[in-house]
Length: 255
Image 1 (tube, rainbow, N blue to C red):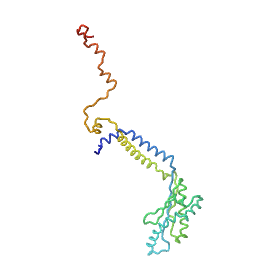
Image 2 (tube, rainbow, N blue to C red):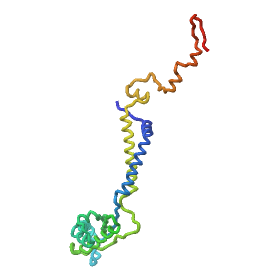
Image 3 (tube, rainbow, N blue to C red):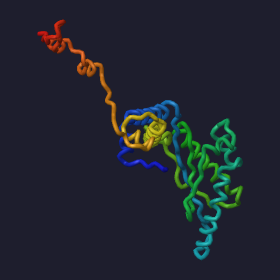
Image 4 (tube, rainbow, N blue to C red):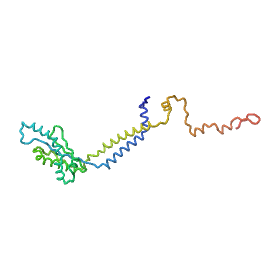
């Protein structure tokens, strides 16, 4: 027979295990804060952009075709920008001992749909290093693309800039803490119901009826030592007043 649980029973379990649940929530949040502040190295992002535009000698009648052609080149340019032919020169320009693959891991190249703009976002543990990497990548790409593609249709749109007291891109301390709070609550609630499910002790008359399927016909109350002393049949004060018989069979009262 399938057992069901009512909302009242659910709230009773949560109330019973509330201290444990709150303790887990606080513990998870504290761990998230400690990890975010002390164990995760902050990283910063900086972005630079280029625009892929038409060549200056394109007439007005061919302008639309030129724009569509430039848009179709975007995906090709995104691949070229993170290729060794560009990034090896970036590493040389910045005097870095990193390979092209290692630099590519620090870069993210993206473009909006149906636009001629490519944005390069660099990530580093230093804001200045991230900005320099993004700007150098854009500059080298613009310099090399005419030779690679035989086209001069790339211009710098914007360069990355540094700011005072920058906020790190990661870790997101607030987000990490909120996730930890939710995770702690889920673990706490799940553990509360697991402990309740594994608890086979009988605590009430309802537990007996549920387990063995028969009604309760009587309850033996729990008696403390004080109750036993109060209800003890032997009481010296009363016994002295009890009626007793003497050796002659006559009733005598002890005062």
